[in-house]
Image (cartoon, rainbow, N blue to C red; front, side, top):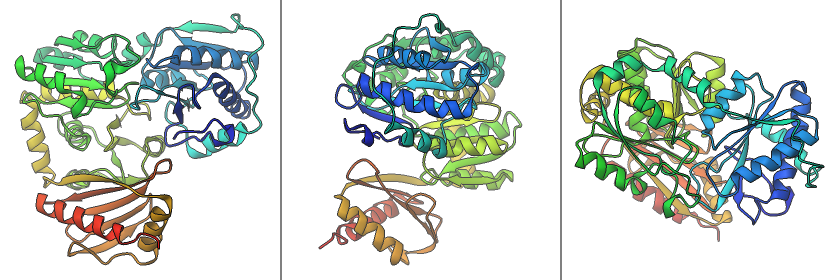
Length: 477
């Protein structure tokens, strides 16, 4: 999802265009991309609808946002800019609530500090689908990168999206139930846009909250704005030291969640998806389809079968889950990389809501989070074990692997028979014992990602070794 300084190389990946600040993510390229988006808007919306502009906590993100606002105003659009850095799910909700022509969000999500990005969120409040981003990319070549003619303060105003989003959020969670549980919660904002949102919601719900890193730091404390184990060491320690009920975090733009149980275990997104799918059915009496990407746990399939729910598998990228949410009633949709949304919410991933739903699950059950996880895994006939290999392969080697697996697909992996081959996204081998292996080449890096799920740690090791060996032997001559 990076781009070169040559504008023809600006590509919208699974979640917009991202690049290195000052290398390819420049003010000139921001103006060019904004005009390309505006050319799409001309074909899709009347000019009386406002365009929203938002940004995260990154270096210059607010200045890039102002630049985009001036370009849009130059082209005759009325523009509303957020009054401070803002979570992606919040601006997505606003795009729909304010009957807008969509929103431009300046964020590189969980990427390292030197990156920034821009994504367009249509008025349906979810990620832009490929036909929209393809149109935008096609517009880039003919778009100018010239500065706007003036600052257009008459057409640009600021707004606070927080009150309306919170009002909506409180319709999705049982505030009184959480209040009655009197939960002790540790919250690590990771210098992200969720500060002032998630901590405020927790306090509104009567939780005893201790917060960390609730200020803007464009270097994210020297770490990554990603709520994974290595970034959550301080949160884990705080939970254990103070015997808290749970620890919560979000990524940089707050669309991904991070959850720590009362024992200090960082829960995987797969586990959280399973836990919340069960909670929504069992405790809240909700129903609907479960939607997951090809790389996400099949424990969700097992749970769906137990409760008589439909399961859908999509390509990787929340835009595909969002699309399904707009077509049918989806109980929960999510991906192994840490994004989810639920019935009644916008078709965009929301780390703030995900975190609060875990707190709600504890409040409903009155049991420790680790116990709820155990019960959910058992009910879904688990555990299953997941692993991902990131194999560094040159382009020719990647091509050779894909060609071989496409033309001569294996009939077995580490002695386990292959019963079906899926090509929804990459190549997925469905194994006879219920396990699976997925090969997905990176579109932007010399990487082949190999995801796998097995029913034992021993098999996981055997499958991983088998795949590494087979792939290494497919090097082009």
